[in-house]
Image (tube, rainbow, N blue to C red; front, side, top):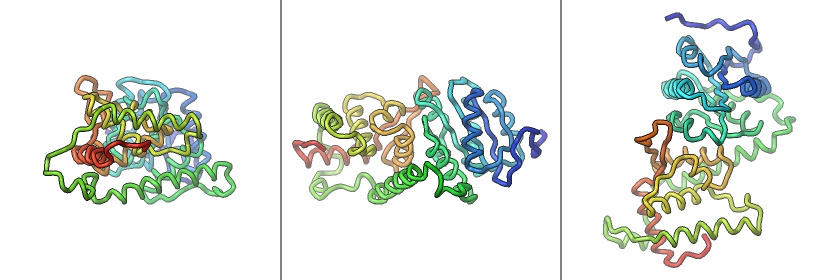
Length: 306
């Protein structure tokens, strides 16, 4: 098998890190190239999704891979996503996968490694930030020169705050989601209180009603909204795909996926492959998280708007 290290004639030769770019359409390719060029990185090669799997496998060395997906390419898309996820796991390169809300389920089903930056219908700042985060994982540092003068500086600051908030929240949960409150400790091991579906549904409805009277962003609490949705589904014996959980989070899909990834890493959520559809993944509460939520509702007794 021949290794490829040379670059085609139509690529950029700046001194930034090289990136392999694969896209599902001409428009998707143009958008990916704009992001990479703006960030000051070098495009090592560009290709369509159909040839990306073989091309990446033949690449001797790559700094990063950017996949831009604006339509479902079927098996070729699945193959390249599997390939990218596996290579990121091995530390071969960093990766960003940019996609649309319509493709959340098939894409998230194949992206197994949490180090892959997955963004959905992202704006310019989110796209640039994802590239910087992916590069930082390999110690390349940010290529965002002159960022202080960029019109997206405030949005990038907000994204940084968002990531910091996730980290802080998970740090508070470092003792584990099953760490019981004082009253819950009195419950015998394995004795988990019953919670009615109506109780959880009432809390969810009350939380959604707030947005009728105040701006929605004032109440963004995706971790809690996802916990409530998964508890409701567990009680009703329903399965929740990634796309549905992102909607329940009531925040942009990229933000919801960032929280989902962190909650899985923390062991609060579990991913389960759909046995009937290899292109879909379900999310459920980890047993400890389920017990903690049920004990919480038991201690609250009659919940107010929470």
